[in-house]
Length: 158
Image (cartoon, rainbow, N blue to C red; front, side, top):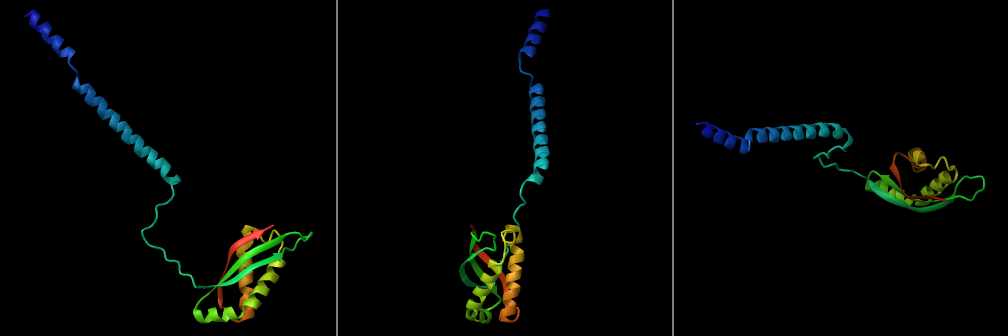
């Protein structure tokens, strides 16, 4: 009988203990899952926001090309110049025809405003103010609130 017990103990000890393997596998999966959720919560503020499902429609009015303008910049040496392509936005077609008739006046006004600006005035941070000044001046000369916005498609300073 002693021999039977010792051979039974050897069989039990020599086999794989599945309880330890299952416990290790469970702990491994639990740690991996916890790591995933912790990292996801830490990184989520750094990720860009998800796009909305709504389609955003940009409603632009009618654009009228004023053309490409080149002028000197108000500088001490007078060696700097600006090359810009300007578009104006009008609300509807009837105003578009009126603006087309006033293109020489519009070009002159824009050239006058741009040539009076300094390098600091033409900086990227001041362009919205510059557009507002141009829009106000053009609407005053044409009569009414015809021009809704001013766009620069090329803006090169040298």
